[in-house]
Image (cartoon, rainbow, N blue to C red; front, side):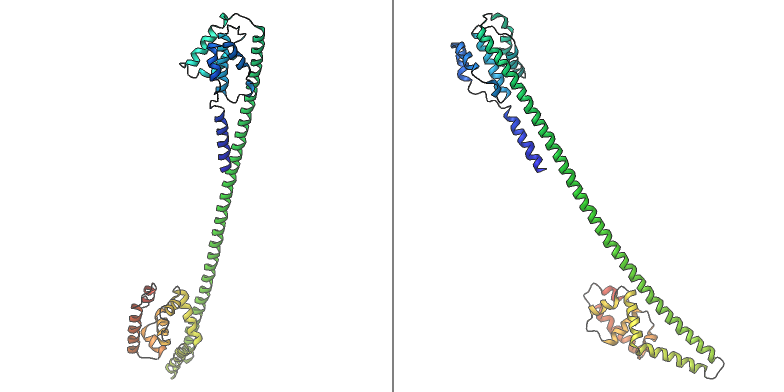
Length: 329
């Protein structure tokens, strides 16, 4: 676009050079028309019309040339040259130059002194004028072609820039879609892993119920029924309390189910004791106070006190995770 701008600016400057009048230099010749019109005619004939650079110079020369012939009482063969001035100055019909040109054309027939040399010179200037017109036409054609080429180039550059921007936008959208797909796959993987864990937890819970029912069925009607059931339950509770693997599974399940609860707890309370950490995990698993007392091997009163102290520590935290951590109470 910048190239197009500079190209059009160059054309405007070139075009303006054809409009700005450079008709300076005719002043001395114009003064001679009243005193020595023949010398003025000779000087005007000395100009090479084909070398004029703008229409203003051409119109000024044509007016002075026709005026010099009229002042010299020379016969003007055609109105070609005077019409140059009339066409140019006709843009302002009230101007002095336009009125003067019209007056000369109206009185052309009165200048009857025919001079072969003057006529030949006039014909020569007509030819030069036609050559000037042809040169001007070619220049205008070149300018028009240049303008079209620059315009087409600008359109091409603009379209290429639009395509480049569109391509960048498409690449951005594709990248965002790829990231979204990766996030969805990761989320799906997390859901699948959590589902497997929950399934394992349920399986173990159902296995525990199955073992208790099996024990009850085998011991039904015997004297040691209650004792065997109690021993079975006691052994299961003891396993939950002492086996780190079972607690680890419960810890991971709580962490995954409650959006990273245990990670956030350790981050907020890095110096938390192991028993208090177990208490928090059991509370997050929504176990009853009696169940927690059995798993910790403490009395219910001790569990209540430890819960109160842990709640106070979490409530005093200045952390954005405090609300999540307080939700277990």
